[in-house]
Length: 185
Image 1 (tube, rainbow, N blue to C red):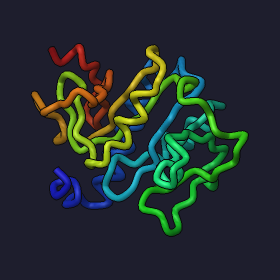
Image 2 (cartoon, rainbow, N blue to C red):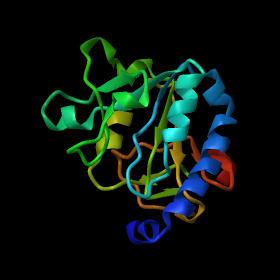
Image 3 (tube, rainbow, N blue to C red):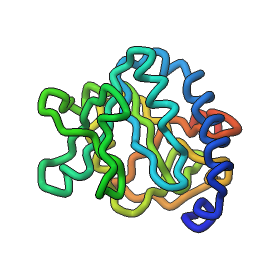
């Protein structure tokens, strides 16, 4: 899946990401959510910049995971950003939120999470990049939080292997459609 995604042209990623963003913004759960945690996209993942700007522009509280802090022993943290300038990319594999203590938000306060993946199945299982970062984060969310996986249409499968620690998403949004995982059944 990594090789297939990497083979996409930058133009195709941008076009498909914009379509994904339009479907995401049309979701009722997004409209109802005041606090949204998004990943900061890298490489040929579904790009999240347009979504982040849209959320900020509509007055939503935008949260980004602090993976750098987790690796440094601070535990899993999510941090509010007020603009894309609050994302630090230099010297990092994944852009990280600028750490300002008063912007560290309890994970349980997040209404909706946008989750990356290499592949998703109809039960909401996802294949990540192998580090388990998002699974550890999603284990901490409030039970009523909505989890939306973002991917390209070729990343959808009938079934994927899942382990007990894997946390499934509720919906998968691609450039073709937004699908509730219940709708696949």
